[in-house]
Length: 465
Image 1: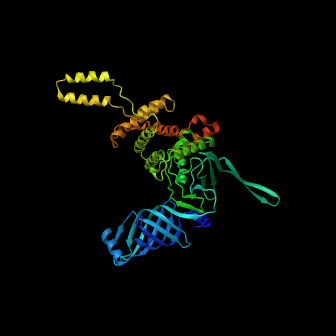
Image 2: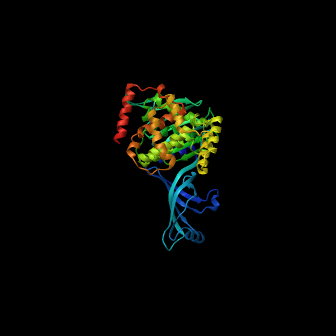
Image 3: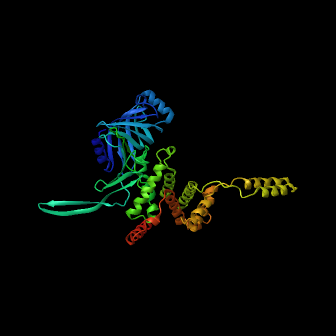
């Protein structure tokens, strides 16, 4: 697909309920070619207002295919999954997609060869022809999060010799991180936020750069901001385009913005850059599209928040906090506090006991006491208290929930009010540990009086919702 067609595609998808009409859609098993497609026929893709990408395909099956599907999947309708979707639009754009869910039904109980297959996909991918140049990655949000911008744009209109100012607004921001420049541009007319960075400079060399460009927003805003477009320019006159569904989010805890008061650009983009650096340096290919364990912890908390239960959110927070503690350098085994002389003295005493049952129990306890001491989250939090990173109330909030996470008492609602009273401290601890892990300190970015007023207004509006 030429780059010009890509811009037309973006223009189409910016409209609610946009459609791509396809002359052919193939449904294939994983790692199989189009010649062995299970289903082939004309269809369409619909980009719904709620963020879902839906597909439909009208297919005519052979009697053998129809009989096989009829036997394996039910009488007049069937469900199946694990398929890949390949398509070609009438203007020649080819793409493939990952199917999340699919439903197939026969047109009638008498005609089982004509079927209508409908479902949803999680991602579209295609290739775009671009002018040859430096490789870069671009993430484009169709419905952007609220970000702090420093570059201003002035729109003017002229009438003869007279010039009238129409509007002046924040339009972009740029900063250096990881040895490369990250550029942010907001297009209010198209309601798009474009974030881009060069590939192959500094630590930004792995193939998932465009994913990483989107991750800091999730931690900053505490919501699942997924871009609608991802475009990576490989520098060889081709680019890989991914179209992901975005999802409208409900209530949010506000993320790092509300915890640290990151209202002003200095603090906002400093956090963004440090988070980006950390993800780039600690990229783990075992997590596939998710760049790092830290983002997975945030994702679990975000999903719990969208569920709406303080109890479930608290359990997710407690688990994520322990995960962050395990990533701290202080998480390590310690030698046993029992000296060899003390061990020999206890062993000699146990030999004098008449009860074999009691002797076995105490021997087992002694063996555990003399072994290397396993690391604990409480010891990491205690160290962070001594360093002034967190306060005692944060440690107490985590310990109150830790027992229920460790022992699986997820439905134990005895005295829930007393546990939920420390909910805000628990969430603050989660954000403090993340900031400590990425090397961000709020002491370097104090709020001005105006910024503090904006923060209080933001918090008030959030609680009102």
